[in-house]
Length: 338
Image (cartoon, rainbow, N blue to C red; front, side):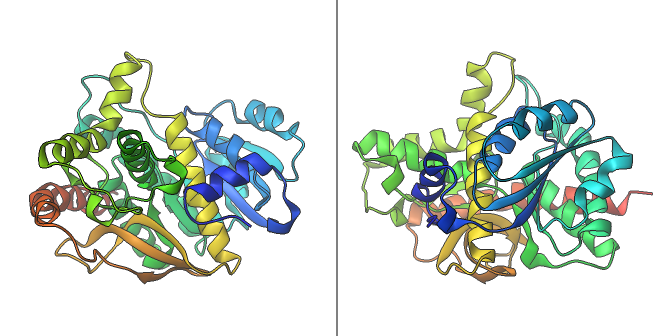
């Protein structure tokens, strides 16, 4: 069976179609032709948890779908192109993943990203609210700190808002934290789990190294360097790709891991825990990422922040102003829509 933690999705990808873990989930990927969308769709096609995979984008989706449809796994793949085909793509879907939008390029501000991606996310989630209002909505499109409030406000406008089914996919922060800690300690990264709370940009990304399993300790200077690397890992990739894009392959892996966890929980598996940026009452911010217990209907229980170190407490305080501003920006965007 698939495991909720990092080892689970990795094991699932290696095993291919292990019939014991089959389900009949209908999953849609909106933005399936892009840098994240294509490898994400490949990973989903490879999973026994997916029976129907609907791919949507404004270009190239018939080709991507045709290519993936030749893979010898059970998921039936269909491609949809253009806004007129979006309703058919979404009807009957239980999980919708949205990597659509423009990636960050060198020198690009978050505002530059916001101006384009906010409109894309608002339009796509509006279609979700109309055609699959009870689906689990997994938002990858950045800036997540704003696109989740946008999604919530759009669902409220349509009268179908359920905060337990709207997720900001922050899993890449956890994947990176696990990898970087494992590198420093010589561990197998599949056995490391670092909760990452807060938001999904810069200093709002707060890795809880004090809660890492297995337990680890670092000198303060090394801890600060490690934390900074986790927070700026996206920029590390943008620079390394020298203008050719941002994190696409690792984000696709992280997105697939999150979707597999959601599907596992929907299938009745117990004890599935993932961090995600969601509607929250754990802090003074109306949205905040913390570990969540997932269930058949989405969030079963918010597990909260737990016991943390003074250094981590300070990081939370330092993140609040930026986080609140990003949330407000998303909410105001929907209010200003005609």
